[in-house]
Length: 131
Image (cartoon, rainbow, N blue to C red; front, side, top):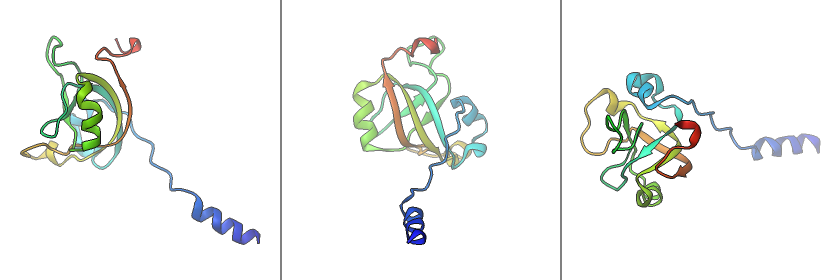
């Protein structure tokens, strides 16, 4: 009986998700192969997001000095429908990195980040602690 319960507990337990690493957008751009295939937790600005173009950047498009470093977000209708109407907005997300288009030239919308979890969306201004 106890052996059967232990066996059922092993089947029922869900596989643990890998804990995301927390790099900056600049760190991923500087060393894309290091992060290839990893789940990363990023925060930054989505200045626009549609089926044709969606990116996360270090700063608002209107900021002095421009966007800063930018990473493309892979096509995801749910993400686009949620974040697109709110853009520009500050987000925190967990995503899987695909370094192929950071290492080689890609055309169209590169699938550099595949969003796994949208953790938060806030106003265009970052939280007070980020300033």
